[in-house]
Image (cartoon, rainbow, N blue to C red; front, side, top):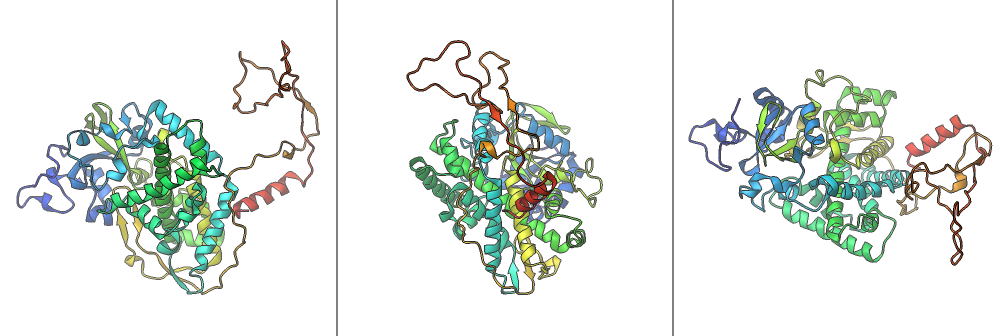
Length: 520
């Protein structure tokens, strides 16, 4: 087994050394960037697994050392044990000793920011709570209507031509359109924002500038929402009781925007490619035996939108997968290799339908909180496209498809298709501006039991339930100026449950599911 990390980053190997190979760096360690990592990541993972086991030493840009975790169970331990593996990048020894410069190509990914993904413990809970609470306020049905509308708008742009590139004309634009609507900044959606979001995670020379453009857009949004709150995600973060600063809000919006955009754009492209190429998908979808959500889930196993997540940093000296990890070492969550770990998936051709044990959305306390939104964008978007263009065919040979990769993801450059030209579809003129859930009126609940009086339960603990506790009923208060009587000061309210007023439950349930699936 190779002894890792005994070289200085950037050291030049001696002449005629195998390390002169572009894919091999100092110390004989494999690079997680370059031709092999970009063109054949699965082959690279197999080599690393054969050489090192479930945890492998690798080199990042600039030949900076790190560990890539390949095993499924090892990745679960990595993500679920923040006491050993922190998300605070300031622990990175390479940063402390100056081996990694502030202008490193991966700086937009690892530079510490005041956001929940770089926090542990109480700070993480506070910031993550603001994000998850705000996401719960999103109207899922309203979002699906947005997705369906935007999908058809994009299809209208090319449906009459008979040919299209589903990456640049569909997959790269739909997630950004949806996220801009959710954030409350539809006017900011443009080609520059799309390309900046793509560029900043690639480790390019322009990644830092792309990041600056996105931060500027989000800073303007937060300033507007401080002055004029609205029913959108940005306003909910600004107003949340966690009292995040403007910088915290901007950085969380940036985090969510990039993670949601990059992962969902890749997911849509990967699902469409597999539907067009893999006989299992095309035959089963056309035969009605596989739904689009099932195709999405299979793709999350086979072609996860993020191949790896950087990173975790060792809190102290420890052991993982038989490797000795030193305090301050950097580790990457190996999503793609974990999904193909032979111990959990010995047959890569097996149908994984209904199995969500993949790590496509990471795991532990930092598991992606917006995964259901991402799934919805892919489900509704792909379904809308296939409904409009059911005769889609790949426009080039499968061997002609090309990918661009980096340490975090691998995405298609193009997905050319051909189809019978069809007319544009008239879109509903409804602006679909409302994204927030609307509280259901108290008398809107429908059940089959007759109306009856329900007494209010007594408090079981001193002080009763907090005002935000599930099931808490707000008590009426006396008019201003009136004294509050002792004992039981306010009579318990009487809740009346109305009787059922609509068709039988099975029929009504089926209608509701149909409307929900179609985004209405």
